[in-house]
Amino acid sequence: MTVVIGLTGSIASGKSTVSQMFSRFNIPVVDADRLSRKVVEPGESAYNKIVEAFGFQILQDDRTIDRKRLGKIIFSDEEKRQQLNSIVHPQVRQEMLEEREAYKAEGYPAVVLDIPLLFESRLTSYVDRVMVVYVDEETQLNRLMERDQSEREEAEERIQAQLSVTEKAKMADAVIDNNGSVEESFQQLKDILHQWNIV
Ligand SMILES: CC(C)(COP(=O)(O)OP(=O)(O)OC[C@H]1O[C@@H](n2cnc3c(N)ncnc32)[C@H](O)[C@@H]1O)[C@@H](O)C(=O)NCCC(=O)NCCS
Ligand SMILES: Nc1ncnc2c1ncn2[C@@H]1O[C@H](COP(=O)(O)OP(=O)(O)OP(=O)(O)O)[C@@H](O)[C@H]1O
Image 1 (tube, rainbow, N blue to C red):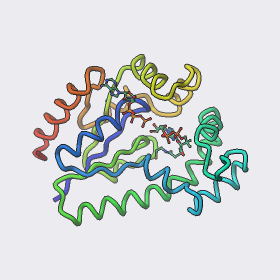
Image 2: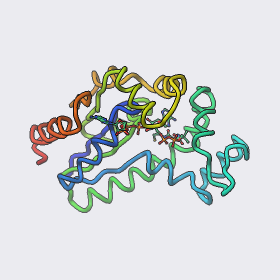
Image 3: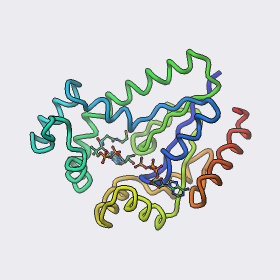
């Protein structure tokens, strides 16, 4: 029976960093962020709805979505963020479930759903167990600003758009404390997978 692991955390807590580690255990990952990029490509139904809702101002010269510009709009406006979510999330959920079922059919011992908004979108029924990648708020802010080369205000807006990573850790079946080195996080992941009898 395939164990479905929900991997979440908050922005820049280290979900993608930990997510990449699962390949070392031959455990596939369904990445909601990757799907949310796919479903908004030109020609996809969500693309037309986004242009209709936000106008041509959010397009680049090559007609693809200007993610930086759309991000500035939705991370500073809760209503507009909900509007974008209502366009993108249904398609992402559908494709996430299709990929999950395909991996289960292949008989993998486990499959990971990497979902940043697992709790906010109330998707815990999609998974058997929840693993949260935790980082303290200072480190989270610094890593986000460094990675995205963003200003403090923009980084804080993105962090505020989600439940705090501390709140998410309280609801987890397992927590990876990602304040240390990547190697230390890998060791924690290995221990959790052993405790869960997955590896
Ligand atoms: C607004 C967009 C275009 C900005 O793109 P950008 O490349 O700058 O960011 P990216 O998509 O890589 O997201 C980075 C992180 O931002 C956070 N985030 C993204 N969207 C949201 C959202 N709607 N609400 C809260 N946090 C979000 C997540 O932690 C995500 O991992 C993009 O984030 C988007 O389309 N968001 C709506 C779809 C969504 O909710 N995706 C997140 C999980 S499915
Ligand atoms: N243990 C660590 N030590 C140092 N840097 C780290 C560590 N974990 C992650 N990072 C760095 O912090 C930044 C955020 O990590 P990552 O992109 O994995 O977070 P994320 O939760 O996937 O973010 P998002 O929600 O935007 O997808 C990246 O630049 C990453 O290289």
